[in-house]
Length: 353
Ligand SMILES: [Zn+2]
Ligand SMILES: [Zn+2]
Image 1 (cartoon, rainbow, N blue to C red):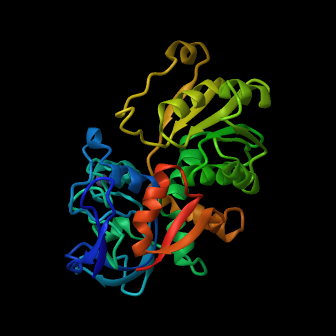
Image 2: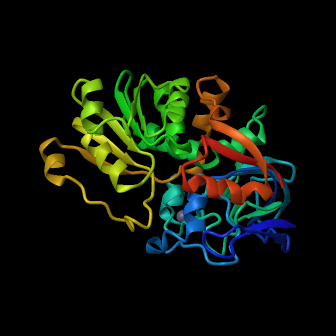
């Protein structure tokens, strides 16, 4: 089968033939119909995240936002069958640890990020092996296209979990979203659907216009104001109730914390870059004085997808609204290169392998 393989960090992926996967006793093989291209892939392509032990090594197939049809299942698989349309959360769980058994598979004690480590080759390929398919394959509802589901695969569900489960967004609460890439635009859309009044922050007017389309009440172009937190506090008359760092650099993380009102909640969904190496300094005294919460959020448990599907079915959420373009497997490297200059909008999705 064809696959896009990492050879050297920052160099074009090598499109070549590799062996097709075998489901194994507990796994399934999915014929891919769509796969999103994500800033997390860009991080892996850059060689980031060695500080987390998930730096992809040469030979790795990247790609972690898949949607497709099951073409083979192992003998021990009970809940997934050939012909099913599925997506796969990037945060693969083992299905057996205490976290998986209590509905928190996104923080499985043996979590493996799809497409980042050797044991779980990713979805920039014609076929994908889903390990522990009963845990990690999520069946799709009728009437949702694979492209929309690929868009939902990582950034949309990550934002949903962050805002619907980890944060406490109430009707009319001010929600600030710092960074309007794929995960940020998803957060704007979801926070708005959950009843929040959204302030979107980015450096580019085009992304802020898209944020407006997706429900943002107010926007801040961070390249045009000296004091981003001050601007958010002025707009919100004292600070946001919930603020999201949807990028993962020191500036957006600190701006997010400092945009909050007393008792505000900062949600960290972006992982950091080589510049931060996994650590950001924060105004801890201010956080104490204002009883500000710092909340980490990773992906989403596979058991919670039905909540998104119900809101999509009811028209409250539309994952296709953040899908910006469809491309082919051969275009992946050019999309990753464009991300170096923040040159992509929303979520590019591969629909031809
Ligand atoms: Zn992703
Ligand atoms: Zn587990």
